[in-house]
Image 1: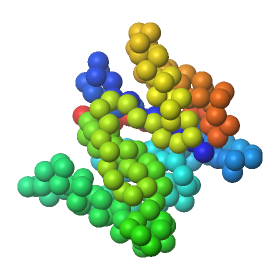
Image 2 (image 1 turned 90 degrees about the vertical axis):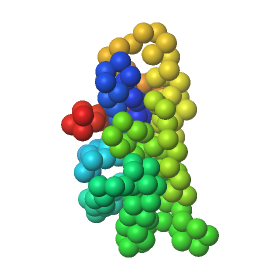
Image 3 (image 1 turned 90 degrees about the horizontal axis):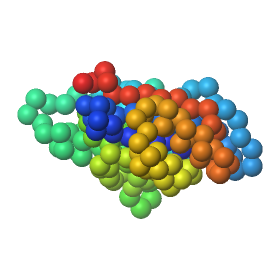
Image 4 (image 1 turned 180 degrees about the vertical axis):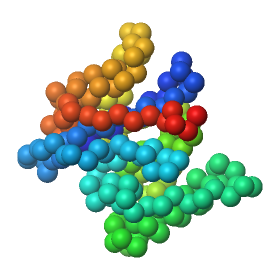
Length: 185
């Protein structure tokens, strides 16, 4: 299910745009969901795949921790934010707890940094582009192709990429939502 793309526009003050399709699928059928899979929560932008419940927890239940004055960005993200997320998932009975901790996959944007959060809660920082979901590889290829061809309208590029992916991945819809981090600049 899903295709979420995060792209940092280095030609526009490192503005990060995140685009997410609206497909809900069980592998056999699909429907268009009303609630966006990309959204803001506090100082963060989030885009999720794997589970609508996980996305609802990230949007409506998770309260991002306050950053302490003397806390570095890395310490804040890798300690405070990670611990807060794990705690929230455990409190709401989401994820596996047997051998470590397993959740779904999502993209987390903080300031001008893009992270892919994998199922074991590792934060993988992406330089300027990432995608998650069943359409991830096709989406990254589409965006890279548009960039190489000189596409400069980022929102159109992301919408076109999602539409392209929807033609080859049955778990992706051409309908999509876009958010950006301009409010944090």
